[in-house]
Amino acid sequence: MHSILAAQRQYFNTDVTKTLAFRQEMLTRLELALVRWEGDFLDALKADLNKSPYEAYMSELGPTLEELRFARKHLRRWMRPSRRPTPMSQFPSRSTVYREPYGVSLILSPWNYPVYLTLGPLVSAIAAGCTAVVKPGEDAPATAHVLARVLGEVFPPEYIRVVEGDRTAAEALLEQPFDYIFFTGSPAVGRKVMAAAARNLTPVTLELGGKSPVILTGDADLELAARRIAWGKFLNAGQTCVAPDHVWVPAARQEAFVQALGRQIEALYGPDPLAGEDLPRIVNQRHFDRLLALMEGARVAVGGGSDRARLRIAPTVLTEVTEQSPAMGEEIFGPILPVLSYDSLPELVARQKDKPRPLALYLFTRSSQAERLVLGSLSYGGGCVNDTIVHLATPHLPFGGVGNSGMGSCHGKAGFDTFTHEKSVLKKGRLDLPVRYPPYGGKKLSTLKKLL
Image (cartoon, rainbow, N blue to C red):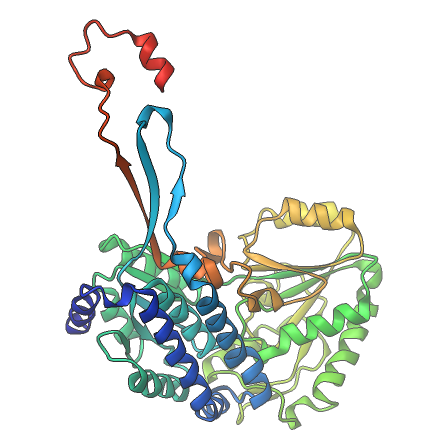
């Protein structure tokens, strides 16, 4: 690991990665590689997570290409030095902010979206002019191997290097003094990453998770809400960092909403989801058993079936759930959706303030008053009004967590800024006013106050 970092630092210090032409060429290389090896990536995602080619392209390759093309289109403007005003006390002078890459970066990506959550940050690192060591999640080994092979063919290892392996490899990388670390994963592992980064005073971005709630108000369109919530929840078998974790519904509409969910789940996955081909699988046996345990003590209103041999769990809706139920004790990260009821929206909002701030929040309403209340009162990473998930897929919006759900942002200009240091430079003219130099005896304080 030390030799990998040393080679990348030596390459970065040549300054070759800093030019606009180089960055744009590298982004083009990556785009051509994604197109050329599209089939390999789709096959790997099928092997790792049973993602259909359609879902894999929609949620992995498509957003990556959009992120890449957006960065290349806007890169010249992002890189441009920015003139800033200068106070009269510094006259005559010129203030400028130069945008320079942090240097050698480390990208630690997870298994649940192993293409998008690896290459999305890599696009930002390339755009910023950094070199990068990439460590994909070990629980998606087929995709990690394709990433290593493709990136190894496209880029020299002293510029972009993929390191395969388990958590031991990640821990060894974290011991090295990288210039920037970008981590996507759980809050528990995020704390370890931040502690390791602190030993080298390395800045970090942490994209974590949490129990992202959905709130329906009394005037919400139940069928539309049920369809969009079901799609967002059961995409990738619920193994999505911004998946709806649970739903709050007015007590008087809970049963109607659960019935609407049942209809929409059948429309999406058929009467027997386990027999269909559109349902991804749970990543491993440990998570499969963990998810089944979360159903204990609740009523299964929809679904509940499972196939241990194929690691698949049918889209499941739970009712008779309390905040003390197993499903409410941790981030679910699977195809299980608790539906809880509430009586008063202001009271519900007040209770949410006492919980860890989630990565996402989703509100379904037709009321502008309810929208102002929820958006103005609750802190969370980002979200949607009358939809789920899709805020993640636009490079025009920064994406990131807050508090327990993470720190820092990615996507588009925010991703470029993440891997970029803003270097402030004040260039002074030759005129040299004596007011700032000692000796200070005889100089009037009132004159100084007029200047500052």
